[in-house]
Image 1 (cartoon, rainbow, N blue to C red):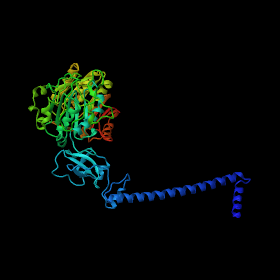
Image 2: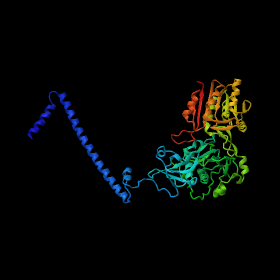
Image 3: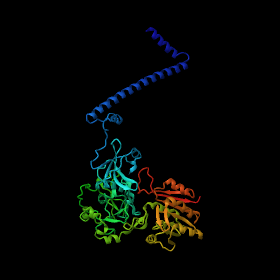
Image 4: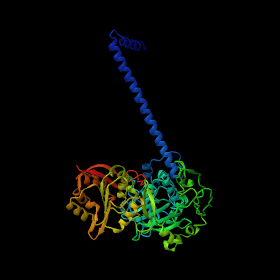
Length: 571
C-alpha cells in the first residue's frame, strides 16, 4: 500500500518536473485517454440497455398481437410481425365492403402515381366492375395505399382521389370544389378577367374532371365514362358551393361534344340578374346536407360577392365562394330547380327536353373578359368554346411588349385572339390564316367587340403551308409570326401532326421573316416534352422567353404541364 502511494506521488512529481512543458503534455494525454475510456464504457452500457428494452418491448407486443389484444403506443416491427405469421398492424381504416380491392405493384407506389394503368396491376381488373366504382388500391401485404375510381381514358383505367374515400357523393365533391375555388379567389374577385379554370383534374384531386368558369356559367368537362357516372353529385355539389347562372356539361370521350344545359337560372337565360343578399334560401333535403353557410364579405368594389373563408377553413362544411353576378341577383331557390335536383334521369336528359331551351340556346353565345379585352364564346356548339384560357398570359405579353407598329402573321388563327391583343397593343396590321372559314366569322366578331376596324386586318382561309410558300415567292416578311398549331388535325391537304411537323413550320416561317422578326411557337401536345420542344426550336432559332400553364391550371407537384410556349429570334 505504501509502495502504491509512493508510486502515485512519484507520478505526480514527474508530471510537475522542471520540464513543465513536457509534463503538461503528458498530463493532457493521460486525461484525454481516461475521458475516452469512460465515454466508451457509457456508450456500450446505453446500447446494451436499448437492445434489452427493444427486445422486451417487441416480445410483449407480439404476445399482445397473438392474443388479439390492442397494442400500446409501441409499434411492432413489420418484418418481425410477418416472420411470425401475424397480419400486419396498420393505422388504415377498414375498407368498406362495397369498395373493390385492387393490388398494385411497388412501382406504382414508389412513383406516387395519380393515374392507374393496366401495367400497375398485380392481377387484371375484374371484368364485371362498373364504371365509376371505387377502388381500394392495396400493396402486396394488404395495406391500403390510396382510393381511386374506375374510369377508362386512353391508356388509363383509374384515377386516385385520396386515401380514405368511402363514397363519391355530393359532400365529397363539394369539399373538393370549395378548396379549388378558394385557390382561385384572385380570379373570382377580378372584373378584368371573367373566364378561367376553377377545377383542373388531377391538379385539384380528381382526374378526368375539368370545370371552367365563364362569367357566372360553369362548363363541366367529363373525360371518361367513370367520372360521368357521378355527374348528378357533381352538379349538385356545384349548386351547393356556388350560385351559377347555368351549368353546362360536355362529354369529351364521345363523338358528340356539344354542350348540354343541366341547370339554368330562374329566368331561363344567361343574362345578368340582380342578386338579393338578404334572401334566405331553404335548406336542401339531400342526405348529405351541408351546414349553414358562412357570412358574406365584399371582396372589392363592384366585384362579385363571395362566401370567403380563411385558408384554414376551406372544408365542405364551410362552403366557399358563392359565385354571383351582382349583389342584388334574385336567389334561385330549391323550390325552383327541385325538378332538376330530384330526378337525375330527367335532370341529365338532353337540353331539348328542358323548358325555355330556345332562350338558353340563343343566348349560349356571349361575351367574357380577359385582361379587359372582350372575347366571344359559345359553351354549347361543339367541343371548343372560342377561347383557350391557358394562353391568357401569352396574349397579354404580346399586347404589352411586342405589338407596337408590328406586322403580325397569325397561323392557325382560330378566333384570332392573338391578333386582337396585338391590334390593341398597336400592331399596324394582322394576317390571320386558318383552313376553317367559320373561324374567321368568329375572329371578325372579336375585332368588332373591341372596337377595332377590320381595314388593316386580313382573314385568309387557306392551308398555312400553302400560304407561307406563296408569301415567300412574293418576298413578304412579318415582324411577329405566331405559330400555335393543334396537336393533330386532318384536312383535304392531308394529316397534320405537331410532333412531326414543327420543324417544317419553322423552316417555312424563316423564309418570310427578316433579321428582327420575333417568332412565337406553341404546342399543347403532351407527348412533346419541354426539353424536346426547346431543343427543336434551338436548332434553328434563339429562344429568349418561355411560358407554361397559368396558375389557375393547377397541376400535381413535379408534373410537367401540356402547354409549352417559346418566343425566339434569329441566331
